[in-house]
Image (cartoon, rainbow, N blue to C red):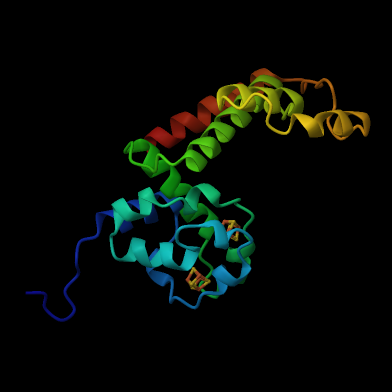
Length: 189
Ligand code: SF4
Ligand code: SF4
């Protein structure tokens, strides 16, 4: 039986707090984050509910939700959080933990978002910045949707919205070193 004042072990909460540098227990469920979040309608559980799920140790349900994948890291929510919780950091931590533990939703949308992240990071590693045209092409190829949004391309190209080429930043080597350092740091956390 649980006694009054007894601490219940919640390893999931501990892991999220450690990774994100926040204390999710501070959340008092006011819901301001939900009202501010531009994509909460697309999430299985909006940020307030994700906070509560972490507090309750509902690891599997949190990992299987699409919420952290839809998070844009825009920080609109944390700007209004009265408890000053860095919600995008929390969302990002769940993404990392889910990948580390190889437990995440296999829905088509989540897979597409993961692919998009992968390709974007790849572009930054290669060119030091995004190369929109190549990114669109690779995304369509890797998601086996060759002609997705192709009808928009001529107009966008003509208007100069999508540059044909990309100018590499001067030191892509420094960027690659930065990625390596970040990967190393992540392993020590
Ligand atoms: S705004 Fe902050 S305190 Fe309020 S529900 Fe969201 S995370 Fe919790
Ligand atoms: S950081 Fe994520 S959870 Fe917060 S408002 Fe932006 S999209 Fe929503």
